[in-house]
Each structure stands twice: as C-alpha cells, then as structure tokens.
Image: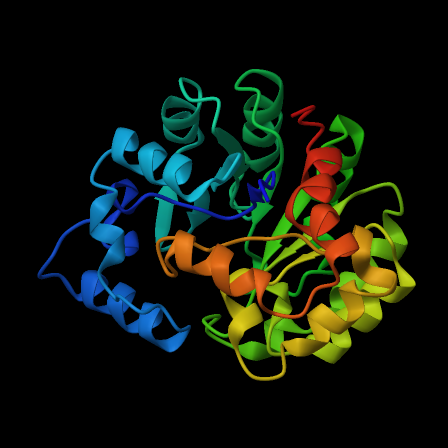
Length: 281
C-alpha cells in the first residue's frame, strides 16, 4: 500500500554540528548516542545527509511525501530562518517552520517577517531552553502566541527529556495556553515525553493541542499515544521521525507496527498535518 506521509520533524545533518555534521566532534558523538537511545539500528545513518540533495533523495526513497524542516533559536543554538527558507524553497518535498527566541527584543518582528515575507508555515519556540528558562504559560510568551493566532499559523512548542530541567516540560502549562488561546493550533514536539498521561489529558480537554511524539513514541510508556490515537486523539496526533536523531526509513517501518488501527493511520501520517499546515498536498 502506498501511503502519503508528512514527517513533522526532520533536519539534515549538514545543517549544524548539533545534528552530526562533523565527525570527530563531541556533537557528532552525542548524535550517535541519542540515536542508540531511541532505537536506531545504525547510529551513523545521518552521515548520508551531507547536502540537501542527498537529504531529499533519502526522503524520496523512504516514500515520505513531505518533511518539515524546523529552525532553532535558543541561547546556545541558532539556525536562521533565512537558512531554513534557502534549504526548503527549491524542493517541494520540504516544508519550512520558523523559530524565534521569545526573549530576544526583535522576536515579534522576526516572527512576522518569517511568516509574511519568508512564507514559513509555523513558528517554533523552546521556552525551557531559554535564559532564563520559561514555562510554556509564562506571560512573557503570550505576545508570541497572540501573534501566531493573528497570523493563523500554528505555534510549535519543543520540550522533552533533553530539556535542562524537566520542570519546564510540564504539560499543564500547555493546557493553560490552550485555554487562553482557543483558536491557536499548538503543536507539542517530542510529545512532552515523559509526561505522556498528562499531555494526553491536556489534548483530551483542548482539541487545539496536537502531539508529535516523534522519536519518543518508541520509548517505554509511549503506547498511550497509540491507544489515545485509536480513540479521541486520532485528529491530534502526527508522525515525526526527528531525523537525524532517528533513521527516517526505520522510523516509518517501526511506526506502522506500533498498533495503530488502519483507519487511524491516514490521519496520523498525513491528513492531520495536511490540514494543520494548510498544505493542500
């Protein structure tokens, strides 16, 4: 069966040392380590994506319809939104998501520029990686949420086990944002793992909350994402490989064997992303 698949989180290795661009560096070893931790059979698979052409070739070979390349803007790592556009614009298989550091003075201006001028389809923020770290419902972030709501693009919140302090990954903060901005689509990268029960409870209450557990859907306790998707969460769960930290081909294969009902898979793999990002694929 040929399936349409949107990979909601994928970054080529060449984009930054953090993604394993340079063998022999500490970052390269960390990328290998993380691949092993989340179950990649080959911990150096990402070396293939030495340039955008090789990255796109792999996406095509795996049978992924489109991959979301997300930027990053934290005190320790910035990948410019213009760079995301440069990579994604020439390739119909690639979709660009902007990133802003909400604690920078120009965050709102950059958010608007990324959406209106660059045409990126959403905005990623990482409050728990900030300086100082912030909870998702910190009032300082509300102008970001309001701007995304006004621009009618989703906000992506990244949080998970690699956050410096898990206290800033608490899902109840997402619930308070969803209540304050009921028209704002909120996408939770890494599915706010390990707080699986809690984030599923938030998504049950607020249907503007969407979950992308990506590589963490293969870790202990994550079967609850699948159980929820086979019920009420079928329109709110989305597929992501988290490449380069998990092999994309293996991830598609493993995902199909997690126990999703066949009638749910089309939503989770494709329809939810197509609707959320207004892709018209």
